[in-house]
Length: 152
Ligand code: FES
Image (cartoon, rainbow, N blue to C red; front, side, top):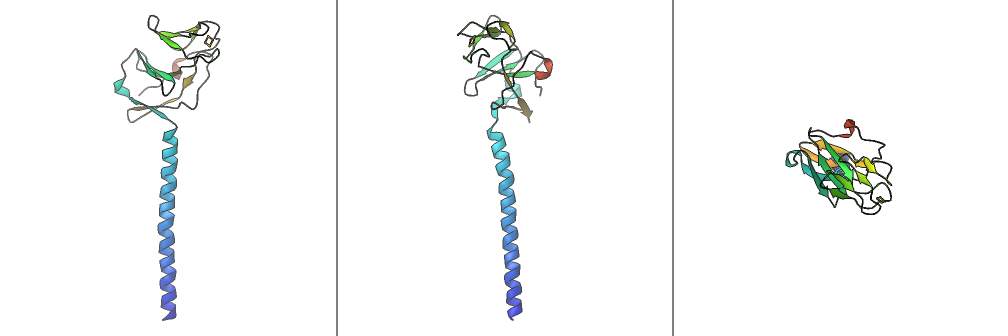
């Protein structure tokens, strides 16, 4: 009789430990997924952005530009001279800095100093038709290249 009780308690503990291990594993996986997506800014669905248009995201501190070929670029709103917030230039399709008059073209390249390098860009991930921008990781560039564009 004592042996049966011991076996029963032992099996009960094994089952309880297994159930707890399953919950811990499940929680661990979901925590990883949640924290990684929290760092990304959801800009919206790909098909909600027209070609050749610029979309400001003030909370994310970037402009999302969709170019003629459908490619996307997320450009930082901060001027690369001293960090002022740039304005859009509706005539050129580029950007102007109100502080010291630097100008940038539609790809963020410098058109006039004192800025010496293009606007920083943020990595874009397109998943299931949604655009995610990693606003925590600005990328410094020396020039624009087509490889910087992201496509659906
Ligand atoms: S901060 Fe933009 S030109 Fe100086």
